[in-house]
Length: 145
Image 1 (cartoon, rainbow, N blue to C red):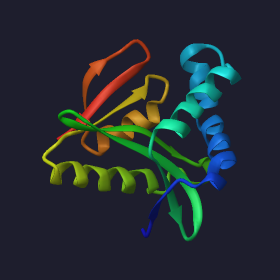
Image 2 (cartoon, helix red, strand yellow):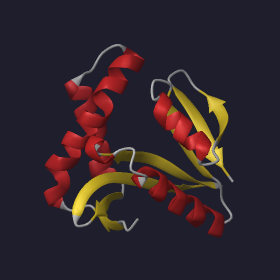
Image 3 (tube, helix red, strand yellow):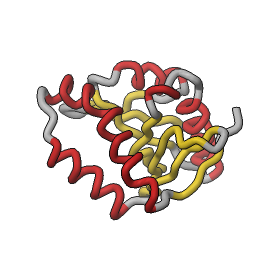
Image 4 (cartoon, rainbow, N blue to C red):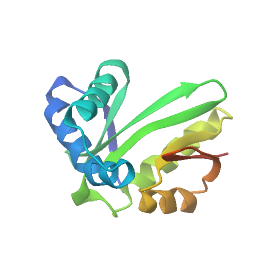
């Protein structure tokens, strides 16, 4: 599969906000029992303004995004979102596999957290070699070496 990764552009704002809401709405409601538009907009804006967002492209089409942060002792996959119409096509697996290679080249584990309600993502992460290293109130923290 040929994917391209590019830095976020101002023109991506509306698409990324819609992606955030589409990907998370049902999961947030299942996990927390409610959806708060203002709270979710705040979380989105924090990422937009302070983090390096990468856009995943497939055949010149924006299909998802991710954010990776370098932490002390590990790489942190802060976010990965794939548009629903492109899910279950191996895109997320490909991006994460590339990030695992990147982490290994740096001799670092790759770490992430997943909502308890996101059972499909949890199974995917296990399949890709992640193991649980912590369990928080709403998230499982996982890591691969």
